[in-house]
Image (cartoon, rainbow, N blue to C red; front, side, top):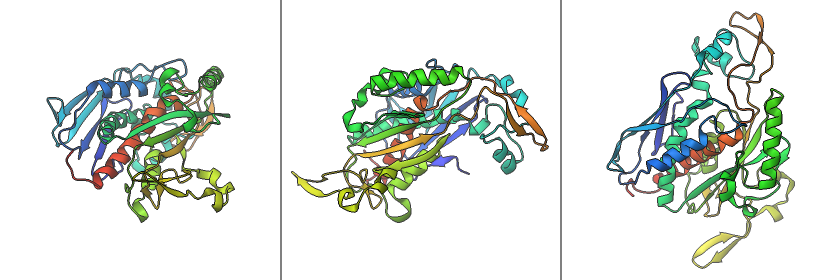
Length: 358
């Protein structure tokens, strides 16, 4: 029913934005992995609401509990169950839209599919569901680290403000130095000011999160329908508010000729390398050992603090008023979500190619 993701390293999430809490069950994590709860907590802090003036002011610490699958700090090979309780839900903020469909939300489509919907913050369609993904992604990152693989994302665009630098020109370790999570300090300040202006005008704006995975060995992925980049695309497009995905040269590649776009091979010691990396580290749906990099486009947050025309469940014309606490721009908090989903894909394909032991 669309609540699970992955084949070997498989997660199932549950819970709603204004229910008692959310959670995830991770099945297929190999036994013997050191589970660092402080690291999981730090990842949850990166995604949590109420971080700064440019994010929603809902106050959730996103404290988690591990219920199963971990003994004396190590994974046991059995399902890992985790829960994150909701503590600051204000359901009354949504009573005014109990029978109204908010423009560009999932209200109408959920109602048509199920005949019933949880109008409190969107219920299951709320981006709060991604807290469970980040918790699972933290464990996936631990497994990637065991194999010498890293994954880092950052904000590369907000509205028309675009960082015209390759990830190779940036110090990605500086991403967490500012509240917008852009590793370029000058552009970061411009983005912060712009988002704050958008917030004050009671509107929202979209942006782009870029991501790079390093250390991925060649040979990871499957041909034809389960290509590595196809699964990455599916993972990213499953995130709330995502409208586009591109990897490698992406749409810019259409401007090039094959003679300049082709990545020539050469030998570096015992390794086969490519002189350029327009392929984004993936060829034929399988990793080639180069960096895997991609961009994820996020739309403006659908809830705006302005009146909008809509209809209710009876088909009558109504006005929908924006209320509650919402992000003026989702991309700063989306950075750890993109990393988490990327890590889940890479771990899954890594385990497909290996035995189920560390």
